[in-house]
Length: 333
Image 1 (tube, helix red, strand yellow):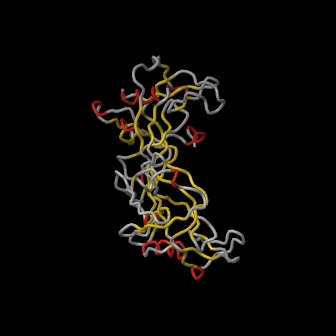
Image 2: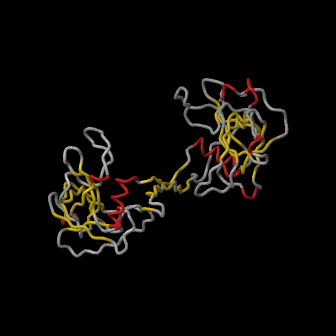
Image 3: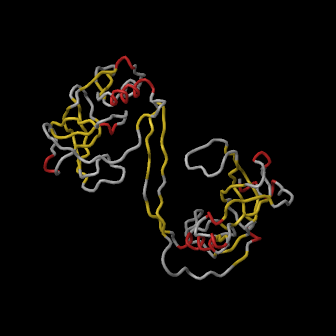
């Protein structure tokens, strides 16, 4: 397919770098089972619970399998432990992140509750790092309305009357007693030279690839360095906005943040002039009629709405041309 590419001259990007804040996130959800379920149910009742393994050691939080023998443990071995314990080790968090349990500076420590043989990771509210030491005694403090979350409590030095500011948190047990753990990350991404060229091409209604220095293959999106041999990539080329569906999947399940009602198709599309398929939506045809080899064309959003992202192409849709023979794209599967 590389023989169909068109060489174009593109000046090195000038002006401000292309940067954007990214916030990837998802809720990790799992059923708790009888052992972890007992632990989280205990938190809702303001009780710390562990489990006794086959050697008699008590683990907090409880583990589902004996760490030594690997045998499954039973919920009948669940035991309550004290709400106070000893600091085994610690570090000071002077600038709490967005996902921290406490909004103010605090210690993050391994704490061994009295009655347990292992330590649990948790926060200690204190005025300063000078108030924390290994071996000191700490006590649990509970939030007014526990929800079955590890954040239902925090620790303070024994006898302390501290009342720290708690950070917002939406995890814990849901109505079906499944554990929901939000996973979030805030990053600012700055595009490199090749990516910047690609993104500016999308805003201009073009799809830009880049040819290898040591071969005829064209990669879309373009790279700065060749993933095949590690040398700098060669010339930029504009490829067509038409291509072939190489593989695809039908999305039938709903999920958080979904913008299209299932079923719909997400496919790998080998653009004419490119040697590496890109992933995008295929719409404008019933999902069960999409097939390998089907010819498709990019559906661009109106020029005034184009941005420096793949969102400038809303989806791909059939061109109506005859399907491509399998031999023309099978090496790209």
